[in-house]
Image 1: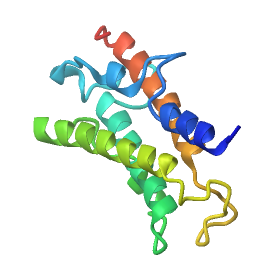
Image 2: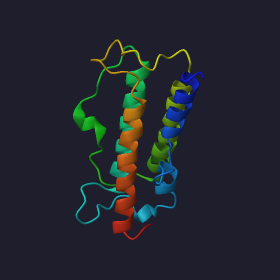
Image 3: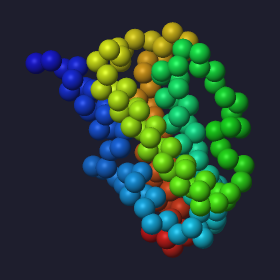
Image 4: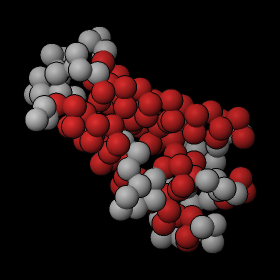
Length: 154
């Protein structure tokens, strides 16, 4: 049995997995615009900050995997400074960009010309970071769900 296609399909599914927890689309569906910039009591980030962090990190990992001229951004660029989005267009744009980049990662996972076990030449020993991005996304999607619950918006 050829295992490579099975692994690729599993990795592709993992990027928006919903078997064991809410996925990104469910977590952001129906968020009240009035709640997007609120930081729930006892938590460190607003829904906007979590969304933007997810988008920025996912794009960064995608670029690391596919761009030989990749340069890591400064750490402060992984989180937006403002708690609230600058407007509805920024929110919608961030959601759309996250979904678009997730699809690009899924294409990367499915691309048989990509050696999933080869180290990234411009990295420091990493391979294609699909599991990292899936794990990172799952963690912060869980934070979105927790923040929505704390805000009474779940």
